[in-house]
Image 1 (tube, rainbow, N blue to C red):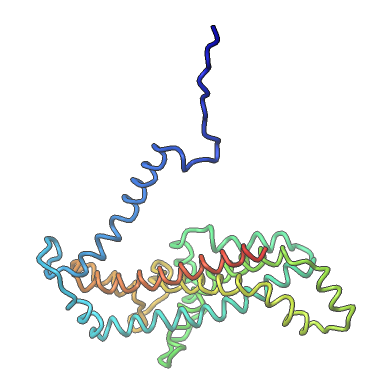
Image 2 (tube, rainbow, N blue to C red; image 1 turned 45 degrees about the vertical axis):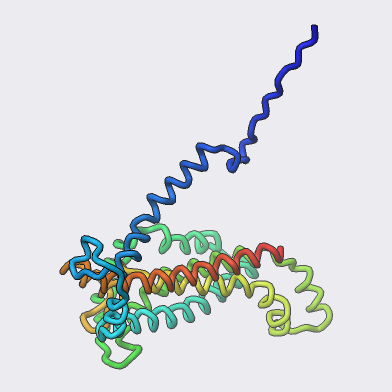
Length: 280
């Protein structure tokens, strides 16, 4: 008598999508992770000053937040700091990435490791260090824009430009140097090589790293808290000062606007990074 053995199919070690309990665990994890953010957005439409119990739907707190002069000023400060620090961080990061990719020099390995320091150290340590630095050099107090934001801008550049260097440096690692050598053999100058070969190749990484630096600067709180003064606060610092007197729908509305800006920027970064992968 011939018996047929039942074939047992087992999922491979990388076929996570076929494991039901792992999918349910992932769904539960994302619910727990994003529930506070979803709750904040929902209660930004709550028609209640106490914002504890749902009293009805309204958008008046968005109009109230948009007409709050201090919130608008702090939001303008955040955008100004983010734009200026992003431009400078991108230029410094691009220059550093090209130098690390193109040249070999003494202590190059240690310089690359030093770029990780602003990324891995706790933000509160960096904030305290920046505060001590500006106090020790007697940094002047400016009243003219954007010099009145100079302390925060310098602090944001110091922790955001290493991200630009790492992303662009990784992209340059995939550039075939034979193309550059061939173009130079044909008489191309350094500027022509950069304009028609290097820059188009690193453009997706350059834009993605710039958007990342923009997000890091826009939503930073700890370092900004230590380097900002009473007349140059940013939106995260302003929201923190308002929260101490109670969480209102107006605070939720301002936070929701900030979250939307960050989400849109993050989506753009992901799309650009995916585009970069497709080019490889």
